[in-house]
Image 1: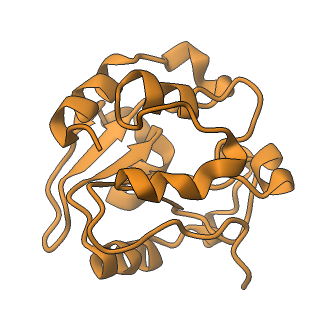
Image 2 (image 1 turned 180 degrees about the horizontal axis):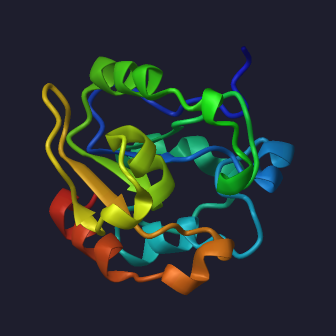
Length: 167
């Protein structure tokens, strides 16, 4: 099946950020984190993970800052609640990450992390997460989606930025 958004991956990255899936606006625009109110590009810049705020159409430029992008669901788009469970592809995600071997992986929101760990979202906490054999260190971060503003906290993003350093 065709991927909604292409992976932005290569060997040697300091971080890969994984979302649940492309949102409706992101899928329509063909760009990661393009929805109105999404804080993703802003938070990467203000935490120093990238030196300037990128526009969603510039998403592939994150590679030049040592950051990659992917999703747990590559063949469907929409809100977390609307994603078909059969589209979750943990095995494919793990294969992609093991192929490029980043220094760390961060989930943008608990839904993707919950699918990865096979746990309920409410059982996860923000920050460094449980180790997985033959896999980089994992972080769980508050979702940058405008729809998730009730659970937003910048601190885990700042902790991650301090952990991975500047580009």
